Length: 335
Ligand SMILES: Cc1cc2nc3c(=O)[nH]c(=O)nc-3n(C[C@H](O)[C@H](O)[C@H](O)COP(=O)(O)OP(=O)(O)OC[C@H]3O[C@@H](n4cnc5c(N)ncnc54)[C@H](O)[C@@H]3O)c2cc1C
Image 1: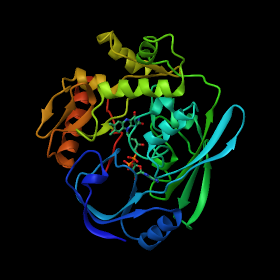
Image 2: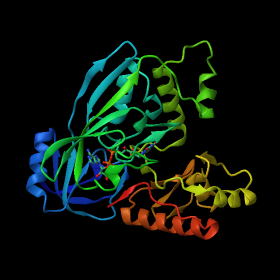
Image 3: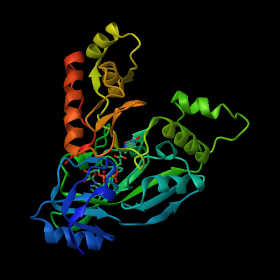
Image 4: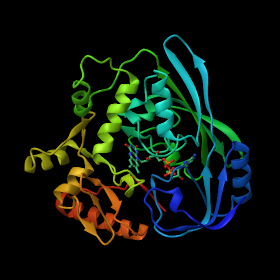
């Protein structure tokens, strides 16, 4: 069923009051295929949980919410388990299901909002782990001939918050499922100090995937706003990866600036630090502001429009550029 003039308030996390001219839900790949084939020449967009989109105005086309479910063990050995998971499954619930089974691999990605199907789009990542580390295949519906195609990890061209689905396949395919391989033999990525600090509070307890996930949940709850309470779409900007020369220029002036080498020639400087140093942490403009505990997150203080958020984002981008000569780019999909 296609609904008209549907409020998108329950379908995205920023909480802007916007409507879609048309709206529908697809619960199977056949349903999705039929809806898209009938609307291919019209404007349409597939969404999951709406946690990485900012609607700046009413959407004049068809929003299709992907609710294709499924959680299937397709292979299991003594040391690994391979799962095929439907695009419409909730990402965090999926993480918790895997850690409760004692399977290791995605525990560091606990509490990331949204769906399984969106996870490969920007190669979600947190605390030293990216979804590409476990992905074996991504199954998509190809709109050019309405067949199902499978992309291997290397074909997905994963990068930092990037993949082929954000580039040459944007608007040409929909993710139907992902296949991931997890471990039964554990080896954890606890490279982020905060994870080790938490784990070392109870050295007598075994480190299990469930325990690591719970530590991540506590760390995230302490520093990120819950979209159910404060509208937001997560990190608004990507962390810029700079040439060492530019990074060193910043470090000469700000020796304590956080920075992480990326390969031999480049360095990542957190966008949150750049925004904070520009004086924007915890500040608001109209109904939008930056979150006091994390300047990288733009928050809806109540009644904000997407346009206001975009306007603030552009102001912040300009101020960061004026101070550091670095252009920070949005991570969020602006619609
Ligand atoms: C509080 C908060 C914390 C966050 N923390 C992190 C974090 O730590 N790491 C991180 O990487 N991200 C983070 N995010 C961003 C976001 O959660 C992820 O990008 C997530 O994968 C988006 O999922 P979604 O289902 O909500 O996607 P949506 O917002 O619905 O869609 C995002 C994009 O993907 C496309 N898309 C969605 N589903 C499909 C599909 N099935 N097929 C094809 N295209 C599709 C949409 O068209 C859109 O362009 C955070 C967001 C919030 C609000």
